Length: 464
View (cartoon, rainbow, N blue to C red):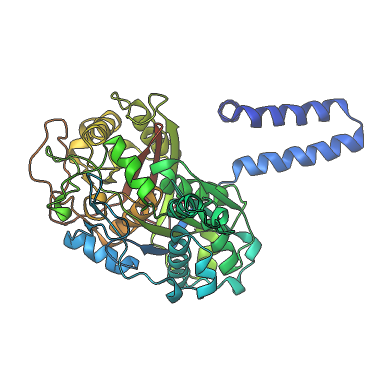
């Protein structure tokens, strides 16, 4: 009984209130009312004790390195950079002239021309990556209940480039496109995925800045855990190249200005880092209820073990120098997963290459892992593909799953000069073979938005 009472005390306040009202209705009603309320109470308790396991069965990606997961992964393991001179926007008037653009992408390879014209580039990426993820998962929508398949997408900005075009037309006295609002609205990526593939289940969009990708995957896992979907298409997408965007980021002075060395510009945790590199791209994961995946004999890459999101409540842009919010997100995610800090083998860092963020993240890791922090491999995907904003965390979740499955940790490239404030093992410059059972994926965004995902090796005989 004491264990039950402890569990009840740990329930969220709204759940405790619902239970109390059910109990009051039982106590004060007639026989029929009592029977009805007892059935409702049984339903609530069943939902509280049910926690479905969530696995990753498919992945798709569009990145500055490649238009698919396998080639992106190969580039990361080889330590190749996808950063180059900007071509999509005229950067001549701005201090930063480099970025991580997606190269060779033609939307008509993934959808018809008419549909593509009505999508922002970020939505086109999302549809393309979803197509790849569904194919990878060998999941045919016509063979499952479309009402049991949900979509949850993260994006920081949405269709910002559409705003550039609309403003230019407005100032020139030309007509603004009737598709402007539905091109730039952040939720349109999720809509187009649903529309293209006939998905009719749970639907949502998160716009939590640079943490949006991890939060989309984490929240999608929660949807499956509570039984609201059997399958979730989850991830993040971004295409923020526009003159307005470049002007804004330049004004914030957060971008690297290493224009003479684009591929060496993103250098997380290196003492000479001077800012992040703005990039575009998308990562999509197919998450499934474990039972659903097993019934169709799906390939399982890894399991989503835990997730958390917190707030610094500190500053609009700067991270809390004490790293309390970031550390809390990591700690709570581990608690949600039932994983000890000493069980962590690898951390895919937020690792933006800005002086404050890298030092703060290092501090957060040490606060959560203690001495074990110095035995854990930490690497930054952004060293090679730059910062995909809302797409970053989703691509990095894919990286965690492949790291676990393939036993290879990709490097942090451009690491040349150690920083005393960043004194962990950042897997400098060369990939490393390693057995990884538990990986963390960190994403920290503007407004003190912190998120952490715990990804683990799937063990078939593990108790549910």
